[in-house]
Structure formats: C-alpha cells, structure tokens
Amino acid sequence: AAAAREWTFDGTGRTADGHRVQLLANVGDPKGAAAAAEAGAEGVGLFRTEFCFLDRAEEPTVQEQVEQYRAVLEPFAGRKVVVRTLDAGADKPLPFLTDATEANPALGVRGYRTAVRHPEVLDHQLEAIARAATTSGTEVWVMAPMVSTAGEAADFVERAHAHGLAIAGVMVEVPALALTADALMSEVAFASLGTNDLTQYTMAADRLLGDLAALNDAWQPAALRLVHLTAEAGVQADRPVGVCGEAAADPALAVVLTGLGVTSLSMTARAIPEVAATLLSVTRDECVRLAELALSAPDARAARAAVHAELPPLI
Ligand code: PEP
Ligand code: MG
Image (cartoon, rainbow, N blue to C red; front, top):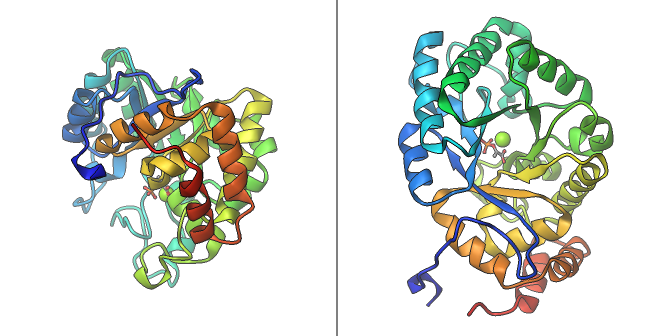
C-alpha cells in the first residue's frame, strides 16, 4: 500500500518538533539536476562529476567542464550545490586517471588519491568549478572523495581556496577518517558521509558483490557508530555533516541518521517526499532514541527490525 501513497514535500525538511534536516538531491548530470530542482530538492548534496565524463578516453577540457558544471548549477540558483571532484576508480574507472590493471581497485589509486599522480587534473577541475560558480548565482561547496587523513583534507582545502572556492570539505567514506573526525573538523568547512563506501570498508565487504549484501548494509551498527562519531565531531566543531550515500533514501534509516546528529540527507530526488514525510512523523528525541536502538543491535538485520517495530506508522 505504501507504494500507492502520494507524498508531498513543502521544501523544508524537518522533524515533527521543527528540528531542521536539509533534504538534498544526488545528481550526475544537467538533466538530473533539472529534474531534482523541479522536484523541489533544497539543493544538491552530491554532484558526481565523474558521471559527466565516464565515456571519455581523455581528460575533458576546462571549457567543456565549465559548460557541464554551469548546466548543473543553474537550476539551483539561490540554493546550494555540493560539487564532488572526480571520483574515478574502482566501480567508476576513467581511462585518463586510473590504472585498470590494479589488483584491488577499491583499495587503490582512486578518488582524491589520483591527484598525487595527476595533480593537474584536479587543478583543471577546480578551475572549471570556480569559473562555473561565478556566473551561476548558486552557493557552491566543493568536496573531495576517498580522503583518508585529516592531512589530506587540509591539502585539498588549501587547493580549493587557491582557486577561490571558499567552502571546501571532504567525504567521509574511509573508516580511518571517521575515526579521526575530531582532527578532521578543524581542517574543513563541512563533511559528507558516503555511507556506500564507508559501509563496504567498515565491513570489508565489496559493495559490488550481491553475495555480501547482508554484510554490506548501511544499517550495520559498526557503520552507524562511525557515522555517529563523525556527526558528533561536527556538532562539537560547529561544522555541518551530511549523508550522501544510499542510506539517506531509506526513510527509517533517515530517522536514525538524524538521531545520530547529521544535519542534511542527500538522496535520489524521487526519495525525498517519503523521507520528508517520515521525518515529520517523529520528534528529534524520538530520532535519538531510535538511533540508540540501532547502535546497540547485534547486526544490520536486528537494527532495522528494532527501529521498524518502534517507528510510528505514517498517516
Ligand atoms: C558513497 O560512497 O556513499 C557515495 C555517496 O559515493 P559513491 O556511491 O559515488 O561512491
Ligand atoms: Mg563513495
């Protein structure tokens, strides 16, 4: 019956008692951005720039990049767009950046790590993002994927600032970075939890293997503890910490993530109305109580069952 329900979203994500949680969209190209803006997303929490260039053998020119980025930013004039620098490698190889012969691509030179061998590609991209941002009227935040240490985060932020991109942060999707979130927060303007990779690396379970789906589940209490650690460090340092993995699109898990202290949820645009309705059905205190239930469960299945049993049925 849930599938037949029509949800609406009034453009302001919040709990029943008015605690704000921004509801943002994940997009990969100009078409997706236009659809997300149309659906009323509060902004974009994850623009996967590599999706614009997956078919390319060569690095796109700065001008080409400016055009793509501008087309994604424009529908969100007056709103926020978090642009992620190229997350090449593992499940998303780019021939001009990654080495297809690596034995363990998920643990290899991917995401921000490609900037060691090809620093010029990152600089070109930051230049293109900065140029697209100046004319768009959009609040542009920039972040790097697959960052492992607070030191790497500091280096990335410095480079973003050098290109005039003032609001710079990183994705937290490597357990090492979540475990050092307190040190991280003094280096960045914000952080965004990539629960897809954070879960696979926490559970040592390849996200591409269906056989490991039960382990590779964002409801795993171990992954949720790392989310909690990161969100709490953000609260302490007064830095926004969002979630941009698929977990944010699961309405019950969105309640748990809110209880763990995250300040925004970014998801496929069509999931926003149901997540919004679910958040409106609970108070912040209830979110915290449900999060505690999930954190103390023995595994993902039990965490999910415990929260679903307590979640008030939606009207
Ligand atoms: C993630 O890892 O959760 C994430 C949002 O990034 P991607 O799925 O693109 O790796
Ligand atoms: Mg990721």
